[in-house]
Image 1 (tube, rainbow, N blue to C red):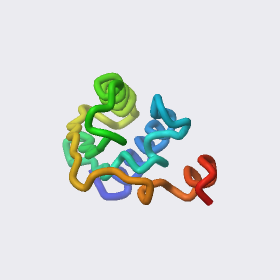
Image 2 (image 1 turned 90 degrees about the horizontal axis):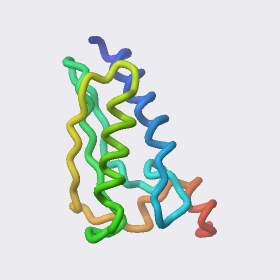
Image 3 (image 1 turned 60 degrees about the vertical axis):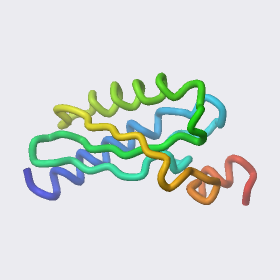
Length: 106
């Protein structure tokens, strides 16, 4: 798989992640800054590193399952390797410009 194909799949994954909304904040998890990295390897496995707005988020399990399900169903993806991290911890500075505008921070 060449770099262009990988980029195309990564772009599709971003689109899918933008359809997943944090249960407590009306913004998608990508624009919230919860997705730290997305990469696709030569075996079509998507490696996603993500965080949560808080380590004790009551909806953590559901959110992670939704990411695995939707990203895993993305065309060109064979499997998902999802890692959850709290380093660095999430904070409001990770919001995209769109999210800041939507939440009234701009």
